[in-house]
Structures are given as structure tokens and as C-alpha cells.
Amino acid sequence: MIHESGFIFDIFLRRKLPPLYINPVYNKLTGKSYRLVPTKQLVIKQNNLLLEKDIPDYLNANTIGSISDFKVKRIKQYQGFACDLNGYEDVIDYLKQNLGKSSIKNIKARKRQLESRFNTVYKFYYGEIDQAHYDFLFDKFYMMLKSRFDVKKTYNRYLLEWKHYHEMIYPMILKKEAMFFVIYVNNEPISISLEFCYDDVCFGYIHGYDSDYHRYQIGDIRMVKIIEWLIANNFKLFDTLMGKTIFKAKWSNHTYDYYYDLFYKKNSISGRAQLGFIETKFRLKQILRDKGILGNWFSMDRFLYKRMAKKLSNFDWKKQETR
Image (cartoon, rainbow, N blue to C red):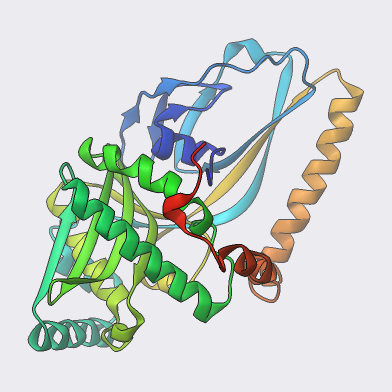
């Protein structure tokens, strides 16, 4: 399963508190404290170095007391983007304070065009969804992402795992831990997005759309409707997670950093040696990101495209073996 490890993914995908940390987890942006189901603690006596990835700087959690023999080195990695919804009365208020007048005017015009030319329906599936329609949407969702994969020629980390997502997400929607937002045109889905929800935070995860409707700027319309719904339902943060894009920068009003925590044994020579090597590697990768080399000039997703394209050539996600 994609993103099985990592602090932030443990929280919203598995509802688990990662090892080495204790409750509560405090959200500095929303002021909320969360109590998660603790993960079975690691056997740390045999380890000289332990690593926890993807810790957003807006979440605080204390480490367990039994690692007193260890020190922690925190290393900055990715940048994250979010819509901080605190204090906004509605989506119009958010738009006025965070987007330019020309952008707002253009979004409204595209939305009017879409709605005047087609029978357009916006639907949130949160707490209930018919199993047959869920299956239908998941298949449409896959086809949207596969089509985009073929056009952009970049690796997509979800397609080969699609059956695992299909099995996982349905019960999460019923428990209000996940949400589908769908835009229908003449009863056909043209945009589907998957978000995960935890307390007062919503995490934007995967979105796809029918490229035939590209001229209507479906991504912007999707964001307007999602922010509108989140504010109405008392969510305080819409976290679009790591990785900088023009679209995220346009819509976000809050940027933050992700960190890796390296736990190393204070009196271990080999632990310090491993720490030095890993710390150097991570800092170098961050320098390359900051300079626009990693993720821009060189993209691992583009590099892996050909290998994945071969695997997808005769791939049927419905027949995929489950783990």
C-alpha cells in the first residue's frame, strides 16, 4: 500500500499514532489535541538509529520516555501546502482574501459556463454511499487517472495499487474518515476527488478529471465547492500535503515544512556514523529541491514512467491480487 509509513500518513490513513510518540498530538493551527490509537512500540534496544518520516511542523507530539538513551535530530525535507480555514465565514470570504479579483472573476465565469451548458450536479459522499455506485465511481476514477498518466507520461503511484484503495476506502467513507467529491455533467462524472478526514482537518489526496472539460478549469471549480463544504461543516484546515505545484500555491494560504526525525543512540559510534550518512543524504536532497533540480529539472515520476507503462499495458485492477 502506498504511503504505509510516515507520521502524517499513519494518522489519516490508519488512524494510528506512530511508534516513538505519545498522545496527545497537538495541532498548532487549529488548537485541537488528538488522541490516536498507539502503534505497537518498536524494540529499540537492538537499534542504534531509528527514523520517522513526514512530520508536518504544525503537529506536535512528545516522544516516549523509554528512549532516554537516544537523541533526536530533526531534518527539514518537503514543503507542504494548506488552506487554513480559521476565521472565514464562507468560501466567498476565502476567495476575496486569498485570490486576486481577476482569478475570482475567471473562476465564476467558467463555473457559469459549465452550469449553463450542461446539467451539472456537485455531490459529496461522506457517511453514506451505495456500494454499486461506489464501484462505478472507482472504475471511472481509475480511467481518469490512467488517461492523465498517458498524456503527462509521468509515474502515478496509485494505479497499480488501485484495488487496495478500492477495498480500504468504502468503509472509511461510511465512517466519515474519507470523502468522495464528484462533479457530474449530464449524470456522468467528469471530476472525482478523494479526501481523508480526521477531526477538524481534511487531507486532499487524489483527484482526477475528464480532460474533455479542461476549458472549464475543473480544478478551480472543485476547490471552490470543497472549501465551501468544509467551512460549512466546521473543518479548520484543508491540507493538500507535500509537493509544490502552481495549483497548490494558487489556492493555499499557509505553507509549512515536513521534517524527518532521526533517533540515534547517544553512546553508539555506529549510530552516529549512520546518522552522519543519512543526515548528509537528506540535506543534499533538500538543497536539490530548493534549487529546483529534484522535482523540476529531474523528476523521478518521469524517470519511472516507462517502467510503469509496461506494467499497466495489460493491467486489470479488478483482478489484482489483494494482500
